[in-house]
Image (cartoon, rainbow, N blue to C red):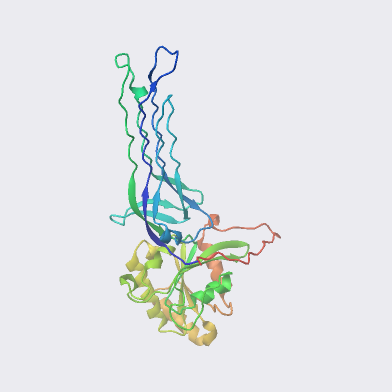
Length: 351
C-alpha cells in the first residue's frame, strides 16, 4: 500500500425530492381533494475518522462523492424517501481544508469515531396537499425541492504521534526507530532512505508512546530543497521532538543549527516544542571525541546532550526516561505489575 497524505476531492450532498401534485379519486367517495405528498430530504455528506486507516491512497482513485437525492412525493399523502447519507471514512488525524485558499481548516478529525456533517442535503419540496386552505380547495402548486450543496476540498493527513524524530539525512533515524519498535524502516548508507513517515510504538518501563520518523531535512527544506518540508506536518501534533545528530557526519553544531533553522522557517510552533538533542552513532567514535562534540552542542545552545548508539542500543534507556518525563501521564499507558502484553508481529506503519 502506498502512502499518500494529501488528496483533493469533490463532494456534493443530495438534492431534495420534488413534491407531488395529486388528487384523491375513489369510487363512492364524494369529496376528494389534494393528496400529493412532500418530497424527501437529500442525503448529507458526513466525514468519519476511523481507526485502522493510515493513508489517503483510496482518494487517488475515487475523487467524486455524491450523496443520493431525496425521493419524489406521491399521491395518498405519501412522502418521498429520504436520501441515504454518504459517509466518507478517513484516517484519524485528517484535516479537511477549503480548496479556494487552502489555508482554512474546515474540520480536524483527531479521534476515532469522530463525525462531521460537512454538507447537508437539500430539503424536499412541498406537495400540493400542504397548500390546501379553506379558500383554495384544489391547489396545484408544488415545490421542486432544494438543491444539494457542492464543494471541492483538500484532505490532509497529519499522523498522530507523541514523539517525533528529526535530523539530517543519514542521522540514523531509521535505525533508531527499528531498534525501539517493530517497524521495519529501510536502512541504507545513502541519503533519503526514508521517503515517507514511519510510525512505531515504543514500550519502556511499563509505558508506551507513539514515535514518528519523517524524511531527513537539509538546508533550504522550507523552500523545497530535498524532499522539502512537506512531511513536517506529521510532527505538528507531537509533544516532544528527538533531534538525532550523526557523530560521524559533518560538524554536529552546524548540523543542529541547520535543522533548528528549518523548524523555525516551517512555523506551526515546531521550534517551540521541547527538543532532546541526541548524538547518535557513538559506537563509531571514541569516548573523548563524543564528549568533545557534546560540549560543542551545549555551547551551541543545547541544554543537555544524550549520547547513544541506535545500532547497539547504548544510552537509549536514559533517553527514553527523558522522553517519558516530557509526556503527560495521559499520553502513556501503564500496565499492571506482572501483566504481560501479547506482542503484535504486524506493526502499525503507513506502508
